[in-house]
Image (cartoon, rainbow, N blue to C red):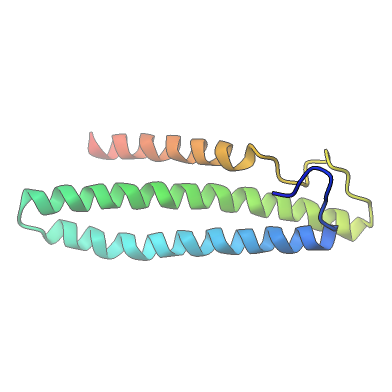
Length: 125
């Protein structure tokens, strides 16, 4: 995050938001690719210890997927707002909802973990 006295130019902000979206997309895809073999290994495990460890890893990957999807959504929405300002040629103002806030990450993470917890609880009961 930049110091309050410095701001990114709109084109640089759009590039940073696109990069953030790509990073979260890749994290989500990595978690999905790991989720499938762990799920198969857990289902084929004959001992309770293997199923317990596999289930814990799957829950952790589910949480990572949920967080990555929420952060990706935030980055894409902010990027689309920035792109709209650039297309219209309007100057960016700090409080237009285009610049990320310090609460974006934590709000997205809390919502994602809440949804993941509800899904995990529903899946286990």
